[in-house]
Length: 548
Ligand SMILES: Cc1cc2nc3c(=O)[nH]c(=O)nc-3n(C[C@H](O)[C@H](O)[C@H](O)COP(=O)(O)OP(=O)(O)OC[C@H]3O[C@@H](n4cnc5c(N)ncnc54)[C@H](O)[C@@H]3O)c2cc1C
Image (cartoon, rainbow, N blue to C red; front, side, top):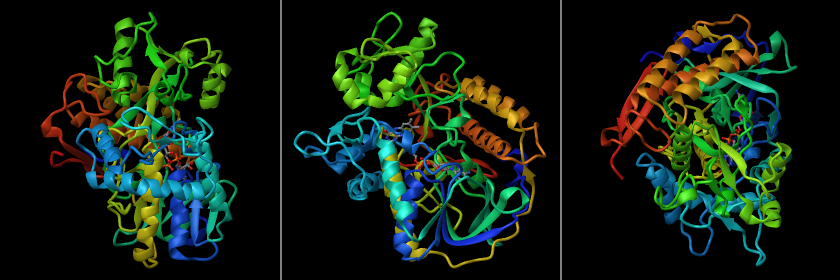
């Protein structure tokens, strides 16, 4: 395949930077991964006053992190071990996890969680004073730590933001949309270009010169018509990395959350999540005729089976009954437990006119989590020297073909901290970046609504050769709608198009069904596809892995 970037361009069309600032390390994104990376980088470098710069597209808490409901997985219970957590993680990843990365996640996770509690994150405790642990899909033990019942992400975000704001070595700039990486003549990361609302001259486009760049830009859910991800999740980090020559892996593995609140056939963009922790506490799925959607005959964990299994079961039932949503029955939990454990979800449902205490909750699958992303090693380094990635934008190897529930806040904590440790020893020296040059690209922001529909139709929960070919054709024609007017909406639309093109290519090539990737025309996993599809600006290649 040719480049996933329209026209093979090396950068977004943007005015030349009108101002420049410097930092030792610049971190892009302020979710769990970016905040943790900034804190660990600042501690590791022992720098003073602003040598770690944290830039973020909108407000500091506008990413996915604050929306996380279920919690953080960690082997903390007396009957649990990191090894069991590793086993569950590898099962969910269907042969494509990197076992070394999964082991790091599960062994370092409990320590990072305790550090977070020490920073002030108030996790829920049971009546004996021990951390309260619940269970989610794919976990063989109760190991999900939560806060405020179902407001875990908000508490994690609050604690990290207050630590970052209090740190004298970290400078935070909001409303700073990062456009492209700045490279040295020998291809090392040496900073980035960005657009800051209200700053500088020349429409606010400037440059940060830095010794290292950490990408923590989160997911890409907005590439689909409906998603649990917030509006900022437009895949910018993956698109930027592709334009700068970094390797991307596993993009075809998009997890669709089985249960988002169904708000009607025309609802698009971010949809409210109905956490599977509700199923962990006894709620179950039924169709329009009251029949259970998934039972132990379909999967031993029934309603708590991995997300792809539940999403596929719902999808099949919807096709069979020509309906567009099923229902979650949480009525058996009773009003007091429901309100104590799931206050956010109950309030959101009631706002939409559904009372979970007495009524069935209408639900449908939506794009939720990108298992793939910018490929890193176990220290968070990408294939471009000086460029690191962590959190959902990264592909560290812990997810494989599917992410185990509640492993992603943990992944952000663990691998961001490892970047800090790497920078302590290997922070590159300062190198002058080249002035951005080469072909540029910009697509018209009007492509965005169509792009989401194309992706949901052609590359959604269920895919086939035909659906993917149609999506590829439609993306090709959207690539012709170029724009000469740079602005945030056009930059985001262009990034979404790049990500969508790379994703459709990988999903087309992978002729099997595995984890979160379901091909109707290839319904089984195939040994020949035991490996990773790795995409760069020049195309996609396959790298096989050994059977686990
Ligand atoms: C509704 C919902 C519920 C979830 N529940 C759970 C759960 O219970 N447990 C769990 O483990 N995981 C959960 N997840 C997944 C988890 O929340 C995310 O994977 C995780 O928070 C990602 O963290 P992050 O720091 O990588 O990205 P984010 O938190 O998304 O942060 C990304 C940051 O990058 C910024 N950014 C993006 N592009 C640019 C740019 N071009 N320039 C500058 N800044 C940019 C954004 O503004 C944002 O600040 C959930 C996700 C959602 C959406």
